[in-house]
Image (cartoon, rainbow, N blue to C red):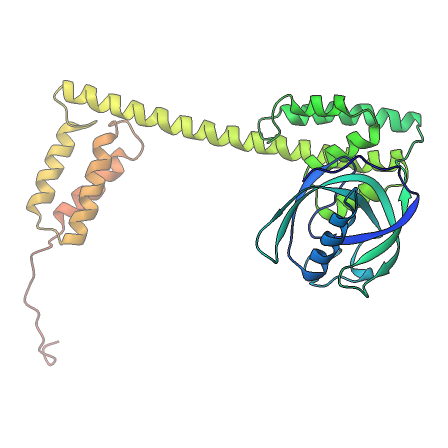
Length: 323
């Protein structure tokens, strides 16, 4: 469902109110929302009857609140257009909302079937200071650095095009705050900022943190890849060593030792669990070169197993008086 031509912005008015969970709708951002609460459905239906399909969108302070009242939503929200609507039965609709302008909720009416609110428009901060300009330039640069990092999910090149398409610095800030997927409280803080400098300081801090985290992710991934590569090299070298040993007619690093020990183990009549452990060590010994640190240790261990009298016993003297 497409919106009609946008009317002239009003400085204050009353509109249906839609509380949302876990998100902040910024100006010029489109976001999907699923609506299923009765009062929210009634607000949506009333908004759809208007020519421009405007609705107020405010974020809940606590997502667990089932039926939010005035104290349960933030003061600053967004007047939005219902850009698209799809029905899923009688009690659920999915919307695509597009933020139009920031607003402050002045009064809250929950007496009807759907929530309504009286609001005033909060224009985008227009003041420009040297600090705000410097922050803005660094934010754009850092955003491009983050967008180019391997651990970032942003499509390459898309971020730059989006920022270039937005002329107002605050719209760029809102897009970045949305893309960074910050928690709701931080997004709301940026949304409520009354000056460019305040909003940019908040976003700049978030960007620095995200770049730091992304850098750590890439370092961890590289370390993991390096470890895997080392293990793969060791495996390939072992395979090559075994092939060379077979070509030379040698069963292992110490072929004679392994062959002799295997015969001694077989003749020793070991119990099943001990035999299983011995065979495991024989396989390990076969893969080691005689110069390896563990080679002689394993040979000694296997010789001890073979020499123990597993199947020999003596008659015990159980005469208490003689004892």
